[in-house]
Length: 338
Image (cartoon, rainbow, N blue to C red; front, side, top):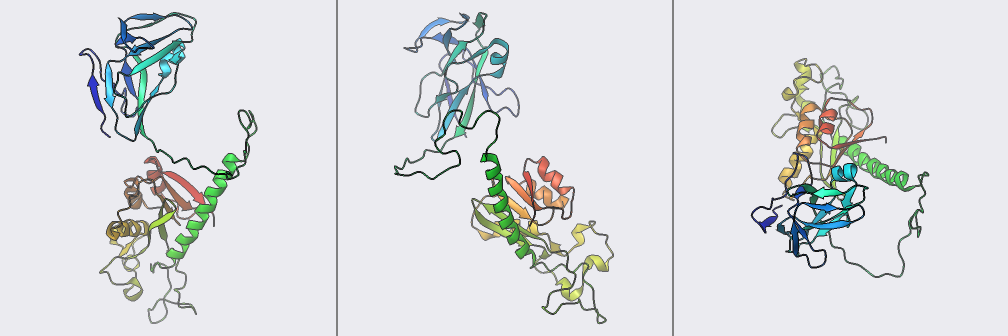
């Protein structure tokens, strides 16, 4: 996002962020404007008496691109220490406004407050907005709250809002986890499957391998649609373990170690690889990944780079350090029972 900024006077200061993770740009006081005409009426400093207000110009104007808005918000330090706030909080700088941005400060305290030149008096937060189409209809869809207005939800009692929201989330999570488990049935990892006297892997009457426990699936969902899926299986060009035997078992590699020796790709790798080669051009940003087991540390590192919103896991299956890696990257973790 690029915002063009223009100084009105040479001694004006361009807004700055106070720290690496600050979302707001602090603005600096420059002069006093008339509340009606917006013309300059005096230079700083100015004293604002208790109960009164002043319009402070910052000497800067913006060219904000559509559909970006700029909210003018109060600084918490002024509010907590001096009880000085914005009269129109939050104010809005629209994309078509080309005048000098002004900060309408009001002194709600009991002492005189002095605004000095270059004092940080407010902050600007930029964000993208969506412009809806207002559709006229005779009836509105019902809600739990209905027509209840101010104070209708009370002061202490929590009604169904939060509970109902998470109930719906859990319902959706269970649905996609069932899809994950169905996909996991395609896994062909042979580790732990017993063999017969001819060194062939045992199958049951339905042709399924006996005691095949390492069956893992992955589904990536965005905007209510499955955008990719995967399961643990041997990579392309590799011999099938069901025919030549499990390499890790043959080499007596302990579980959870030397993952690079395994012929199989984990379900997460497979799903992300499918997304790359599919050519659909769908971003994983804001998506949700569903897994029927916690990710290994290698998969977790891949997931941290996807900018997914959440990862949903089947509760109690293969707890690993990988989950902590994903969580530390800011991706929400949820658990679900089938």
